[in-house]
Amino acid sequence: MSRTKTAETIENVEFPSFDASKATDQIRAFAEKGVEQSKEAYAKLKTGAEETQKALESTFETAKTVSNDLSLKTIAALRANTEAGFSHFEALIGAKSLSEVVELQTAFLRKHVEMAVEQAKDFQTVTSKAAEDVSKPMKTAFEKAMKEIKAA
Image (cartoon, rainbow, N blue to C red):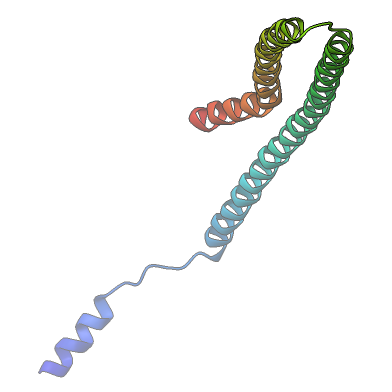
């Protein structure tokens, strides 16, 4: 009896039919969606790479300009220090007494310290501006990328 019951149960069971056209359509839709997402990801990556390249080019150009400015500032400071040194040496040669030498030396040292402080301030200003100018393109690109990431 158990065999007939099993045969009846198997005969009454219906298996869902497999429609190959529906499966093909679903696979095609899935593949098309994957291709579209890949194209979008590539476009974003390409745009990001182009923006990064522009930012780097701008940074390098700014660094070159700033480097030239610093070099010129350094040459000007060296020239001023050298001229002051030669002028002081000429004044010392013309001194007629030891007290005049001490007076010239004291005045020279005071002037030299003041000039060094002024040059240090100038260099600090130029280097601060240089650091800001050099980092600005990359900072801007980074901020833009972060906004795009947050928006996505």
